[in-house]
Amino acid sequence: MTRTDSRTALVELSGVSKHYGNVRALEGVSLEVHAGEITCVLGDNGAGKSTLIKIISGLHRHDGGTLALDGEETRLASPREALDRGIATVHQDLAVVALMPVWRNFFLGSEPRKGAGPFKRMDVDRMRRTTRAELLRMGIDLRDVDQPIGTLSGGERQCVAIARAVHFGAKVLVLDEPTAALGVKQSGVVLKYVTAARDQGLGVVLITHNPHHAYLVGDRFVLLKRGTMVGNHTRGEITLDELTSQMAGGDELDDLRHELQGDR
Amino acid sequence: MSATTSDVSDERFLRSSSPLQRLLTRPELGSLVGAIAVFCCFALAADSFLRASSLGTVLYASSTIGIMAVPVALLMIGGEFDLSAGVLVTSSALVSSMFSYRMTANVWVGVGVSLLVTLAVGAFNGIMLARTRLPSFIVTLGTFLMLTGMNLGFTKLISGTVSTRTIADMEGFTTARALFASTLTVGGTHIKVTVLWWLALVALGSWILLRTRAGNWIFAVGGNEQAARAVGVPVARTKTALYMGVALGAWICGQHLLFSYDVVQSGEGVGNELIYIIAAVIGGCLITGGHGSAVGSAVGALIFGMTSKGIVFAEWNPDWFTFFLGAMLLLATLLNTWVRRRAEASK
Image: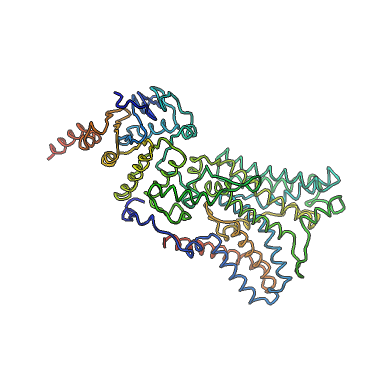
């Protein structure tokens, strides 16, 4: 890969590989994530997208290539370490508790407290206020932060999860198929908040199999196919049509078309 | 999530719920309506039900269930059951009594040892659950059976009979009785000290659930264990603490049992675990976890107390008690489900 930017990337993978026993899940994948940019990872089912996420979010260790954070080569030991180094991952299942109010979900696992000794308690006022303010900063006006998060739509929940990651000081946001289960309009809302996070200076990794969504917001595009990287482009180098055709398998699609027409 | 909500636009972000809707989503609402209904029913059916002395009797019956219903409700909100809770009360009383009788001269030593042993059983339940990843129904069913056997076995081995020897003449008995089994007179009504223990536990349980970090974790491990783990909530530690909470309740109840009668029958307590669970469920705890309240469990226990004593005051055949309890459980659960569905649908 040619370096396209002189700045140090927040996250830089070069030639990363991962094997599960004899199975090659990922081979020679390179990508860069810069502050204030969105790097899209595109690929069909089984292309290795989830393996890539697991390496960036610290769930799995890579066996080949290098992973550098802020230019410093490293190997993440756990999701906790990834979080501590500013990499927040929003998984598809979102890690929210449906029956709990929005504000309790927002701070779950990192509750601010006040008081001392046996009277140590959660700073509920601050939690409510901060939740409202942080959501507002992302452009979500949620008047009642006491409603169970399960009563929000899928898109809204995704937005809360993103706002939570931003609030807790993430420098890099990894989003796993944030629009996969959503309708057109809801997807639009989520993509708006993804760009809002980018505008606040975060580096975003957007995993998707939808080239249209990727092209709307992406600055860089990494294409995966059966564990290998088949393309790595910046926005200026590629058009939506090219992206779509590469994503859909380009030549394979042509073959399929001939085959189907030949049957007539 | 996908197609059905895609037509909902950004305006949903602006929506808020009215105070009435918020009231309707409170977990204890259904049980409160039920409690008022039961109260009115017995107030009409039995003249003696409204007397001040009856109030003391009802509150006492409610408190012995209520003390356990609070930690059982917290555990249920955390997504687990404890079937060993009923016999653990007896175990706690037996340990206290027999240790005092055999090993020392002062009952307070037995009371202290009993606290440690009871908490250890609670910790055992929690650690077994975390380590084996078996359902809590199975783990605590095992503890329940083992404790039932040990209660009988050890008592016969040590005392030679199925009940313990009296410890009424031992040092410290009077002070221990004052703490666990005394009667206070408030405005002509005799109130057992267990009522105070009960109220204190309800307050403590509510404080923990609503205002502490631990409370946030309890709701989270019961509502969505994977999500809680993913954001760094110590799931095993939270659940073990909840089981130890149940053990603490069992210790208080067990000491009350011991010091109000000075001997303990080793076969007691079997079946009470279900009554604690019933009180928690009537009080609005979701059987699947993640929702409920300590106050609700108190109202559930109150319904239990009013029904069990009200039947006596009304001079009905007490054989019908369990029938009423069962009907109450079904009605309260249906009401809770209906109310919650209405409240959530109207959003």
